Length: 321
Image (cartoon, rainbow, N blue to C red; front, side, top):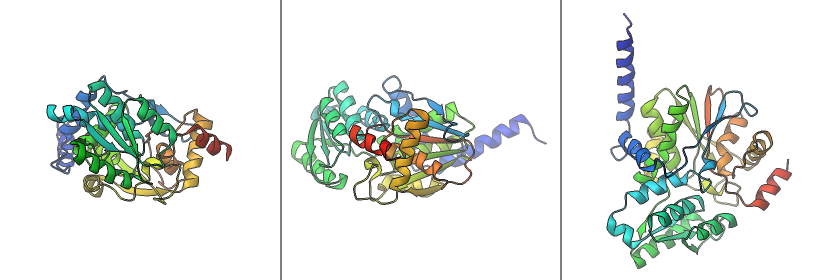
C-alpha cells in the first residue's frame, strides 16, 4: 500500500544512494557549504526561458556574473578556503581568461595579491580586464598547458599558492552551486547540458544534481577539435582534469562534441533570437541542443557559462550568418 510517508522514505533512500556515489573529497556538504560562503558575493543568476530556441529550454545565465562567467564561484570558494599564511603570501593561477578574472576580482576584494599566467593567444578583452581588476598578468606560451608550467614556476619562485582552474576540490564545489540553484528554481528539470573544458563545472554540477535528483540527466559538451584556434577558448582543453574525470566517469550520463560551425550558429541564435551575448565556450551547451545531438531531453537547462568574447570576433561571427 502506497503512502505519502513511504514515498518520502523511498525518495530519501534514492537520494542517499546517489550521494553515496560522490567521492570522499566532494561530499554534498562541500557544495552546500560553498553556497553559504558565496552567498551575497556572487550573482545568483536567473533561469531564462528560451522558447524561441526550443520550447522546453531554459538558460542558466552565468553571463550575468560580475566578470561575465561562472568561474567566479570556484575561484572565490577556493580563495575563502586559504589559510591566513597562504592569503598573506599571495596566489598564482593559469587561465585562458575567465578563471583569471574571477581570481583577480575576488583576490583584490579580499586583499590577496594575485598573479595570473595567460597564454599569449588569450582573447584581448580577457587579458585587459584581468589586469584592470588588479592582478599581475604574465603572458606565456600558446595554450593553457604552457601557462600552467610557468605558473608552477612562479609559485615555487615567489612562494605563491597555486589555484588550479578545475582540478581542485574547492573550485569544483564552488561550481557545483550552479546545480543547487537549478534544482531550486526548476525542480522538474529533466536534463542539464554543460560545457566542458577541464571538467570542473561539469563535475560540480553533476555532483550537486545527482545527489538532489538522481533521475535528472547530466550531459557534458566538449569541443570536437581541441588544440587549435577556436571560438571556444574556454573549453579548448585536451583532457579532463584528474578529479573531474572521477566524477564524470560515475555520474555524467553522456559526453557529446560540437563543431566550430555549430558553436558559431549557437552564438548567432542566442544573439538574434534572444538578445544574449555568449562567448564560444559559453554557447557550447546551446550548440549541442540546437544541433539535435542530444535527442529528446524533455525539460532542459543549458548552462550559458560566459559572455567574454572580443568585439571584433563577435562581429565577425554574427556577420557570417
